[in-house]
Image (cartoon, rainbow over all chains, first blue to last red):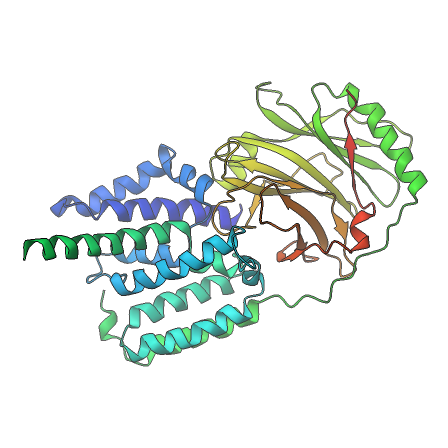
Length: 182
Length: 246
């Protein structure tokens, strides 16, 4: 069995389960999340997403697991989501040919990327964000298993960017509505 | 979850341990050195002609076929053709030629279903096989599409250790950030001096320079390098594309 393929399928299913926990379902929340995870595998939503988007990042999977475990407050707040969004606005266009160079191949021998994570971890530690450091540690540990050939695939993916967009969009919408009511 | 109750030193300590492990895992390949072609132009042309003469017997073959040669002179040929179970679908077929010049019965080695089964992902169609003989093994790469013509394109890889009779489950290789938004095609692979393989890949979209994928001797994808236009090695034969006679 191909470990990367199995990871991709299971991770997509768990992410779908985590999405369902966002619904106001009260006590049914864990059961619905479990049902959504299972059904996404059975009716082909997880393989469909896997086919379309490729493997989800370990960062997104860890966020999904925290959501499934009902970890509050969420670690992925407006500020980290804005950072992910800003990074993605530069990274993805360049990785798809709209820029002076493609940063994606850097992920096959990711010395520079991994070393660049050190100041990020120091900043997170300074600002007392242990969960952020643990997620980065999880990313690095996942890469160290050798399952992922490219470190970018561990760190970021289009679904994480969509999640960041939703969080920032929701925040801006709430601020806009609040300013209109004043 | 009680992350806040962890000692303050614990997350950075875990981070540093994971960082050390990740740094240890980063591949450190040797400088790129292509092997010189092992085949004279005469032999290469003769073998391509033999493959072209055989292909009309491979019913429904279309697009280009990929030809490769084992060191002992046997040949292997892969091409697109209609699937055995559903002729409307594309499949990848392989036939080998022994030293006496006899082609084996074509074998369907990859279909949409086998690609989906190996990658645990939805696959709509497969195409563009590239075959490469390496020692006694055969390496097969092909393109799989999840969405059709306008995106969701991935590269698949499969290996045979018994001269094309059986193949490993298809493995999807990460070659782009997220899904490939453009189509791409493969060119013949070339052997590297360190035991690895170079697989040229051309994206059919503006802004993408031609690249080649570098595989280590253990088969791990370890780099993606821009093809230099003045690189003479890419004009030489490793495995070959064969035009299918009309």
